[in-house]
Length: 552
Image (spheres, rainbow, N blue to C red):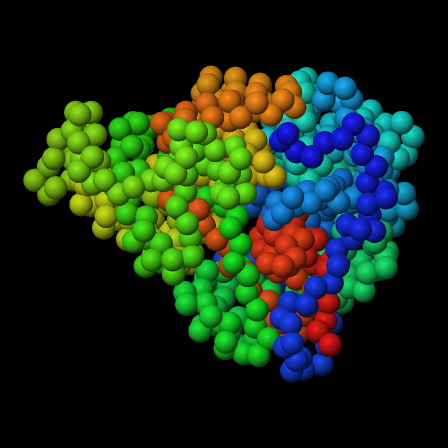
């Protein structure tokens, strides 16, 4: 089975057992100051901040997705937990998986005092059905109906078992009484967000904003921090300086030699290494040099990933499977033909691929296309993302040896996301995230339904990859709970994406997260990964923020 599903799953009884326990972030580390009531966090934001908390816009401020706005359930991607009740207490699938009914939590209020009801859930899913740009995972929503204030049934055009994570844990519920007045929810800036989460926006500047504890939060038995201040920096180096100076208490940035640079720098400093995403070079398949499969295959073979890992990531990353699975978490789905297969450095093979495709080597050693264009490829990266910038510099030198001129170009975060989503790029370096099974990543980044034309934003499948093989396999997986059917269909998907390479895998990467253990506790650890610990991971950051406590 792709997700844990029971015909009648009562999660109310599990609520106590699943309630997030307070865990010691750094056992035995004494506090060096008075218990913190407020902390400072860094999500990776660079440059001036914009007051945008629209949970449907990926360029908006991350705390909107999880801390301010919440989901119906929380499905943990860090370990195989049962779904945790959030705005809903239980759910029930119909017999063929084409409809799911949620029983909502009673007594929840929006931060403006209005009651949360089934009308808000109906409105949210109808909003997604009406606006394709908001339905980033292309959920086939056919109807949404309420039965009283606390029951909602969502009906789909096909079995949707495998979409549980998207439906329940990646759809952020917005208030109908506010959003029904919004003319264009796709571009709505939402500078004054009203949510149901544990914290609410209290102040905003171009350099930082503060979220203050929601006194009427539905999980009222928790003793929260008073506030969390989120700050912007020019990049990783600036953030690292603030982190080591004790000016940031929670962050998720790459730090070279992290034990010496941060871990042992001050008493209580704690960090977590979490395998969570696949680093890729995302290709533009519609136009430019990377629309040629031969070029993508040559890049794939021209990269020495072991060197990139050792020089730039302290060897913390692991090889990525060409089938784009997260291992070992998803090893049960790995195609037999790809067992033990990882990308290898084959420079001679890379050159041969280009020659066989009609490319000729120029006097400067760079290949020239059959149309006479030098094989010079621009790759966009966010300014200040020092680890990715350094990795691209290594790959630039490696690919030059096989006749490819890689040209990194740094752009602001907002420009990067806009260019990526609208197809204004040749290559981008970016990370692919999935859900609790491979289905979510494949549906989000490899399905034709998630690939709009150039010029229309593609928040997930920005390579605009389309494949009948993948689409048919995804349909088969979604239509049954038969594990053998799933295994065979997943194998076909892996073989197709490994051959076509719309997203060229670099490494299966680890996210580093840092916590000032002398000030706060309650964060996820390797022993208790109750959520992903990163400040940029939604909805997990909301779960973590609600669980943080002052250190004694």
